[in-house]
Structure formats: C-alpha cells, structure tokens
Image 1 (tube, helix red, strand yellow):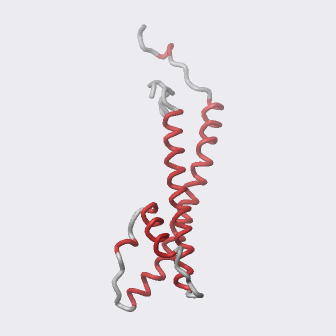
Image 2 (tube, one colour):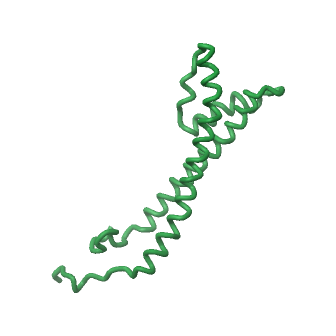
Image 3 (tube, rainbow, N blue to C red):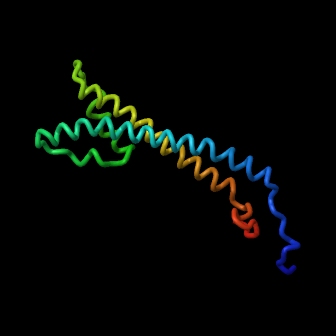
Length: 133
C-alpha cells in the first residue's frame, strides 16, 4: 500500500481539543501551585539566610538541595524541636511542611506526565497527524 493523502485519517478537532483541556487544566494548575509554593519556600528560607549573612555567619549548603532531601533534613532538625515562641524556629517548622507539599506536587506532576505519555502512545503526531507516535 502506497503512502499518500488518501490513507490519512486526521483526528476530529472536537476530540483533540477536549482531550487536551482534560490534561492541560490539571497540569497547569499543579504547575502553578508548584510555583507558588516554591516562591513561599524561598521567602521563608531567605529571611534566615539574610540574617546569617548580616551576622557574617556560615550559610550551610543544605539550603540548596532537592525538596525530598530538604524535607527529610529539616524535618529531622525542626519538627521535634520546641520553638518556645521563637519566630525563626516557628517559621522553619512551617517551611518544612511547605517542602513536603512541594515534594508531593513535583511527584504528582511526574506521575501525571508519565500517565499522559503512556496514555498517548500509539496516537498520531501533534503537528501533521501523519506519523504514529
């Protein structure tokens, strides 16, 4: 069978647009939440880092690591620690929970992306619709 335009069967536009909305709205919502919580973590940790810088104290490299490790490290340090009204320690306890939320958001978007990838295998290509992906 020769390849030609006669054998080409494009997807209907209503199916592709509703399918893309079905996947894009949750994905962009999760990405927006990731951005918001990442900025929140930056704001929470930046206060302590700036204070250490003003006092010419050492800023540990553990501030610049992935959310999973960050949550584990700071949860071990701060969750069992009694803040006794200290604003810095209370802020760090809150930041630990924001780290956990960030970790779960990144994990969920990774799982969602893998599901979309495996769900769409065998479909036609996005731009021309001629190739099987």
